Amino acid sequence: MTIGCLSDLHNELGLISGELSTVKLRGTFGNTIKRMHEEEDVDLICLGGDYTSDVTVSKENWERVKQLMRETSRSAFRDGRTQRPVIYVTGNHDYEVANFDKIPKGFNAGYYQDIMEEDIGPLTAHNAYYEEADNGSLGKQKLLGAYHYQIKGFDFVMLNCGLYFFKNAWDYTYSLGSVQWVADKLAELYASDPNKTVFFLLHVPFSDSNSISAANKGMKSGESTRLLKATLAKYPNLVTIYGHDHGTDSAFIRKRTSQRVTRYDVGGMVISSFDDTHVDDPVLPPDTPEEPTSVTMSIKSVATGKYLTYGSSTNLAVQDDAMNATIDKVANSDNHFSVKLGGNYVYCGSTATFSGNAKLTDYSKAFIYKVDDNKATRVTATNELADGAKVVLVYKASKDKK
Image (cartoon, rainbow, N blue to C red; front, side, top):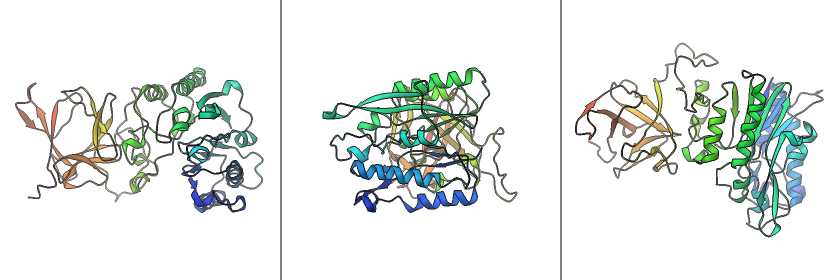
């Protein structure tokens, strides 16, 4: 089965807000679809959300966007295809077309269910979860929170941005009800065959996803996030596809698939991308140097019991939930390590305070000392890390040039 995936089209501002006759989609979307048609024989198109953003338009303009989205997406399939299924997952910005100006509208700009059902089939009550969002003076707005389709023998479970995103595009929280529905649906699907492959689609990823541009681009820590991660971790053959993070150059696969593919163990912790069980395709050319050996673990404060994370893309913070950090031994060094949270390296800047940096520099390199006693009055330099070890990380500040 060949699946074409696109996300974050962000048709916005002048593209969709003028006269109805001038509404158009981004050229990159059409060009990508054209390449798919020419180079691939796709069986399914999965769209990951944020089809529009950053502007309020009339219902007529939005309906025109939907029409163009459907026409363009369907053109990805080879000529002669009688079935042209396209899945639409709602992103955090999609509702803005109706409420970016903070004035409630009588239409749901995240509603792509009608054109999806025309291409795939009707959603039965058993395969759809709905929730109601507060739409101010207009009362409640019905949203499709989660749903399930079976396409060409494969199960696809989708989680839409719902209640919290309808109110605030920057509240990266999935509702507990929609996540619980996903948990129940996956349990139902895997009951008959625990080894089957199921695809799970959503817009916002977990904050510890490989190569994410910043940890705060991922889901907020909370009950629904914990439930979702615990649920997905139960199923080793479940494949999650997400969008949202536009990323930087590091977000693209350059040398190996593990640059953008994140594997989790049954406890919901990231499996090291470079351990012996990971196989990349295609295989690295013989003259391509291997990346440094990594270990993935959480950094927990002995004093507070909280875990190191980012409060923003550049400011370190702590949280109650474990946050995976990738710790690498720096090339050509026995005792220098880099610590990466989300998409940034922990870095000691010119003011001798810690922040995040997308690039590895001399000031992103830490010495690690093993604590020899409970009060940390004695420490010993080490080049090894063990699970549960108490250590002190020592950085050189960029203000200390000498």
